[in-house]
Length: 183
Image (cartoon, rainbow, N blue to C red; front, side, top):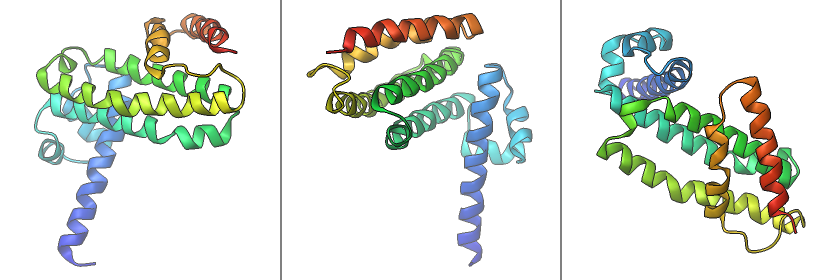
């Protein structure tokens, strides 16, 4: 492999490692330092700052990456679960991502963040539409349900505490919401 191609490949691997580690580190503590993230990713601080010049840039890219990964997971979730179970599983994963997002605090209250969050809305809505279509085709939900309404309805899930009690409450809320979607 030529040097330039190897360098680009290494840079891409470093970027992916930083994003993966940053996701985990920010989930554990929204205050995780960039230096600690670089160390956990096995790169120097300079490498991290070359990819993400500010904390906000890193946080926004973690958010964008998480949304992309979640949206891309729909076919796999539908292949692994019955449609209604897939919907439940997917919304549980979404809840985890949103909880992390809420823990990122001020970084997600800037103009740049508003743009990234706004850009994530159409792909998330389309993912929910695909899940609802599969559920409708299986006769598990009634026809014509608006995916935006479902997202708004299930937004209660990420307001539950991130504790075992909160998880149990989220399950109960999912049960109530799904009962309302049935034919």
